Image (cartoon, rainbow, N blue to C red):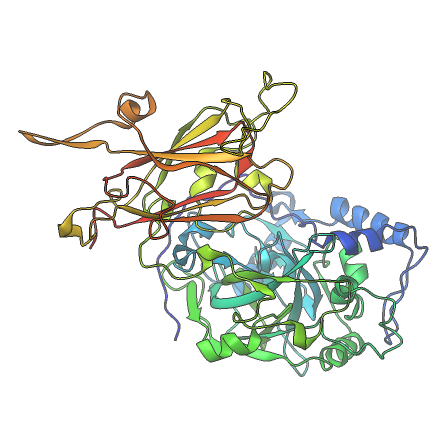
Amino acid sequence: MISNMNHSVDVDPALSLSMTEARVSPSISMMLTKGTSSIETTATGGVTGGVTGGANEAKKRSTADFPRTISLDALDKDKKKKIKATSEETSTTVVPSSLSSSLSSSPFQDLNLTNILSEQSSCVLFATDEWFARAENLIKDAAPVFDPDLYCAEGKVMDGWETRRRRTEGHDWCVIAITPNSNTGTNATNTVNDVVGVEIDTAYFTGNQAPRISIEVANCNIYSSNDDNNNNKTEEEWRYTWMPGAIQRILNQGGIQGTGQTLSHIQDAKDACEQFDWKEIVPMTNLNPGYQETRMHYLNVDEDVREKVKGFTHVRVNYYPDGGVARLRLWGHQLEIQKNDDSKISSSSLQTESSSSVVLVPSSKPYHHPELSVYTNGGQGLACSNKHYGIPENLIQPTYGKDMGDGWETARHPDRPPILIRDPVTNLIDNPLMDWAILKLGMGGASVSSSGGGGGVGVSRIIIDTKHFKGNFPESVMVEGCNANTTSNTGIVVASDEDVITDKLDWFPLLTRSQMGPDQEHVFEHKLGQLMNCDQNVTHVRVSIYPDGGISRVRVYGQPANAE
């Protein structure tokens, strides 16, 4: 069932409708730049062309053809009337430019889910038609924008994927590949996608939205190793090359506005898709027009469907029959599966949670206390000693860090000792240098009061995540707490955040200095005796990293003082 919500967020005027660079994995990037003289596809109607020529053509198009805007003031009156009539045909009502959405406004994000279909980790392989707007717009992370006066040679410029009014049999569709998050080495991992919900935004498509849509997914890394055409391809190369023309599209940095595929090319793409088992996660569903009160569509994926499609690598979006959608987001988890060798992925390697080969990060599992530090629960990043490469606000995001820039990282201490010495008692580096960040807990902080149902426990769990920090993680971390709410004869006295930052309150340890490792979540539980002073109320935490470095997220769980 589709639900609609109102969203009103200011539009960033600096956002551009220009072409977005296609995102591909490192191995496919290497394949594209090896110095191969040509790229061919074996299917009929496939693309054959030089790598250099394709790149030059893409550059030429990006500078000359996008967005190919036309100023109405520069046209004579007859041409003005013609273009205005076209705009009225495709969008009869001008939507105020204040209408927008943002990644943070989704209710799915409040559930600590990740947008699997982000432009940072996906690329479009094929689209039947991109006459009015390219399919790459569909997976943009930025909110859709709208300029009522912006036109191009094809008509009204729209920020989404919009096809022309279909006049031939069939319907429009596109295929999107999700780039694997893989590391190198013997303990490499591959991302296994697990979708929980779907978000569809028809913003600004008020008379030209796709009236119906369905979404399918498939694991397109599963293929026959007996096929001679596949023997020399890695699984990541195959992720892109199975679709005719996909490599040329990637070289061109995406689709070309004002174009559509020929019937023979569409048939080749259909035939390529037939070798995989596509499963619906969203059946054919009616879409509402892109007005503020009707634009957002949120759909939950049934649990049984979710289990059947877990491990999918590609998404097929079907318009029935044509039209436009501004944004599509698949919300869920990105699990990590261990790969012991360089063999191709098969269906047997995609295990369920009970398998030891699948690594489910602890923060993705349900927990009996809320995450008090996350900003969606009111958490705040107040201050830090050094923010050379990141800010403390990044530590309290509900999503997993997308890269090192999406965390808090400090500069290296210039006065660090020339030779490091390990303390034989603590087994930690004997070095007092450190950096710190102060976070304010949401929901009133952690409370041990019986009225809150805390049962004598305030902070019950702390997770320090060093995801992506593989050569610059801290040697160790200490976490302290303080209570800015004190009781006096006149009632509760609340100290200011400034008092907390300037060290006017007493800090007490929650987690003693503990060793860290690279690219992983470190979990510390009260019930395992790994935390201290859990019988204290906590409104703020101070995270100290020794001697410097970076962490991606800090997650503090506990009984909230403002429990509803």
